Image (cartoon, rainbow, N blue to C red; front, side, top):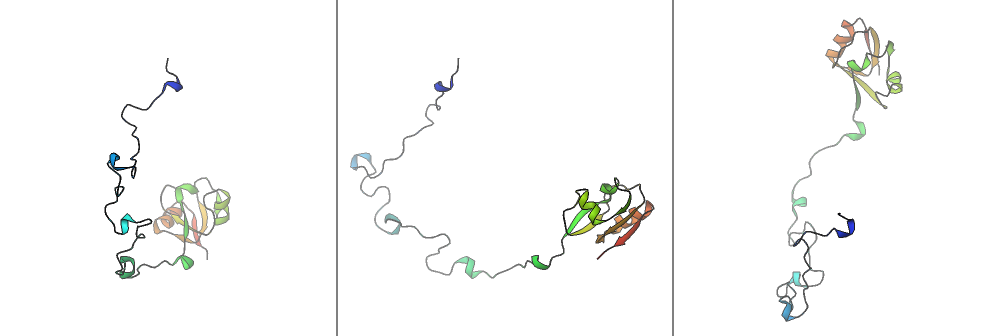
Amino acid sequence: MSLLRSLAPKEGSKHSPKRIGRGIGSGMGGTSTKGHKGQLARTGGRVRRGFEGGQTPIHRRLPKFGFSNVAFANRFEIVNIGQLASFSGEVNPDGLREAGLVNKGNVKILGNGELKVALLVKAHKFTESAKKAIEAAGGKVEVIK
């Protein structure tokens, strides 16, 4: 019967830690595995991340690059025409929000899927394939600002 109290780590998987600086008999006394003198032997003797010995670090030598136009970006929430099959009559951004297909912002209709119902679809942007598919089903497309 295997009990939790009888569980033990596998033989040889646990090691006792190095006991440095505990006398010459340990083999790690004297300099405590730090070598002789120098910055790395001293207390707190490390250099900060990115420090290159005093020369100008690479993140300052290389030029800045890239541009983010987040404040003025036109972001569109995407809806495929296959998702419009459950609608009837007029489809607008408010109806899409109520149906849980978009959250907020501008709506763009893509042409993936099939549409067999004639709908009046109002959105901010349409792809050419979406326009053709909606009009082929007998519906109309209206771009809103």
